[in-house]
Length: 491
Image 1 (cartoon, rainbow, N blue to C red):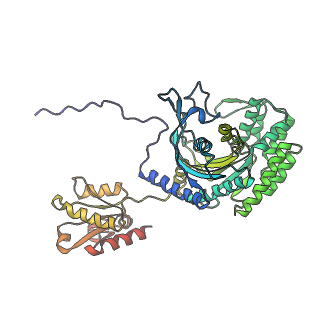
Image 2: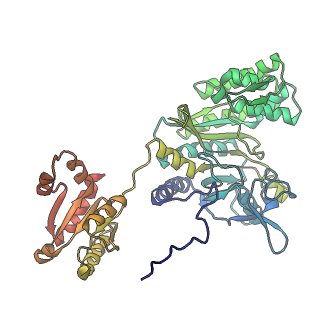
Image 3: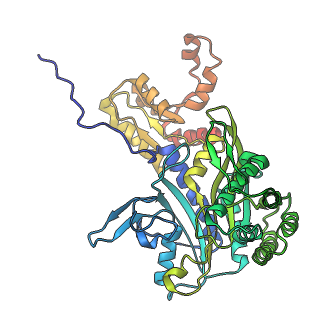
């Protein structure tokens, strides 16, 4: 008989860069995190809504590409009516469109939360994806600093609910008005120069004061030899900017005092400081102490639509990167006040504030730092005799009726291969029913976690066969309680 020729693949199996595949451990971690975070939002009285993945490109806001370049920064396509649609870049711009459309019938202020994937047509990299999950909360229609304070305090509570340990995260707060006051104070009106200054401040935690000073002056050459042109400020103006950058202190009150000295004489900065003082008072009322929420003048936030207070949630854990350098996990979400985003649709003043938590980034960061709970697989019921496979299915049905996750082995391999399958599934236990068990009305249950631990102390195969570590035989009616006890003990 002629041998079958190997089938030549018709196409190469590959996926686009920046679009991650996720197995159950990651999926379940993200779903659990979303549930915990949105539970906080609901507890604070926010209403859940969901908008579609696509929005008209012109509705996504001026921070997105010009209309003649609809695919720069976003993934876009032309609809059959020749209008450009784009996958949503975040969850805030769709909210602005939704609020503008339904403003006359919405409760005001309108408090909503949302979660789901967003897409950005940017260069992917380590921890940076083109598709990722976000979980947002926003208040539309309130200009009160109390609304900003509520957002900041709720963000801290949401990060804590997601699983971040106390003392291992912080929410940092700044104000765009303070930054505007600083730029006005040093007499800088050129938009390019102003942007260079802000980008320099944003690098303070990585480059230190001397590195930022270089970027404020002529420029800086990094370790790779790449040269970044600076803002071209003179020594006196660099001193003013650095005094602003160093105003962050151990308490919010001390930071406010230092900022007032650094920004004396600026009317817009005085307004920003006044709002931060109100926010500070409200944060204490909401239980957000100085060790959880800090005022940090180097928090910039990138999107153009922020107009007032801005905030950023950061994990403080440090890891070693592929080059052996110690780096901090850093930002896992942020937000701020965006008073013009909804107003541009309505032609009326509709102040808004909100924030977003990057669920995909937070889940990945917590997995890296060991804060992610390990996900257990299902109990696997083995099939030792295909003629009695129905017995195994009946046992699995009993376990599911008791709300114990379980499955029956569906392959045709022997016991050794089935045990290997259960191990790869991360199963906590297997259930074995053979001829002897059927005759006695029993089942054999093997605790794979305890069994593996005890097996490490066994020196030879004879001892292993005699002791059968982690393995018990129980009456059929005792199967559920025995497995439930194993699962509880494993926790």
